[in-house]
Length: 455
Image 1 (cartoon, helix red, strand yellow):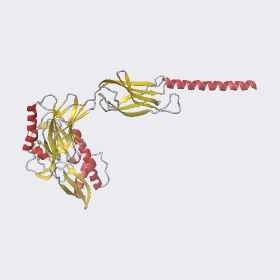
Image 2 (spheres, one colour):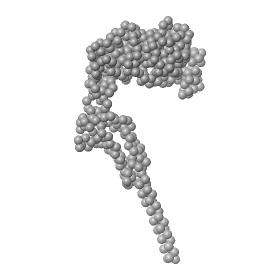
Image 3 (spheres, rainbow, N blue to C red):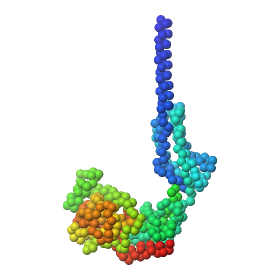
Image 4 (cartoon, rainbow, N blue to C red):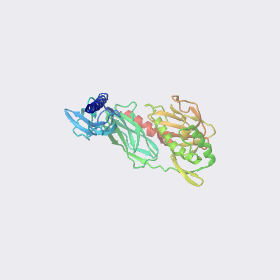
């Protein structure tokens, strides 16, 4: 009996020992088979300025136990971030397997930093004994001084919804510059024929910006330091028209289903009026975003010359920045702003290029129907909408007065006409200025000529 019990205890002991050895083997395998944490910067960092945001992503399948961000300069370690999430010995408490952290590094945050070189270190630690810690390092320049800016324009008069040009000079450390009007930004370009550092920017004072909104020249260097310079200007107020647009079932049926058929990403709401409201608001915003994206396809050269052409022998049906209230069965159901000129003549009238340029867009565009956008260089573009057929394609160079299409009523149009507008960095501006030979001469051409002469 005693022998049997001893044999049984021995067997249990061997089983326990095997279980312990198996557990130890599994634990050892778990420790040996692991990979170190993976560290990634979520955006490229070219250097550190006064306040440079840094976005960090870290992953580890075991769970992190610590993360540190440090700077090293001149033998001194400057802490930026230090976090802990648990212990290596805690099996039941796991740290995060992935995390992101946003930190701001710069001479305004870490006043020990000096202009020169600095080492950025990101250290992550997991639970593993053998691959527990990994470090990401990068050498970066530190610059605390922004570029220098000098305004070279006299007093400017700009209308609400209108255009202007500002001339300035910037130091070589600037990698981007331009004019900021509220939340709008209009990029600057090197002045052709000007001296080093000479820049100009065509900018707009958008129709929806309050008259007291500041307009300033800005410049940034590669590490994000920004300089600003004021320039003298006066905003000329503009009274935009308000109009009521009566919606009929006949109009909705003639326009909305065709737009939905060309825009499969929109979901049919099962109601004609609801579909119209979706087209007139949601799709309108998407179309404007596409126009803004197309504005990036501009060449840094003057492709145009002299005043722009208004389509000849046309009646103006709608003007720039008409505020429209849409009325259906006696009730206002929507309101939008019409950012162009509606020009009507005869059915399928020839549509000509308002000035020389390059075709950067020629396809169906929602509420605008068949649309062409011409680039005239340095952010200036013209848009032609509700067209019938295209006689040009993307990449074609066109001359002022060249026929590029025919008018029609494609998109959200009640009849055959041309919707025309001018764009600056994708922002709609009043075409009347660009049609005016005197305005173009005095506000644009003479100032450019004077700036070249002053250089």
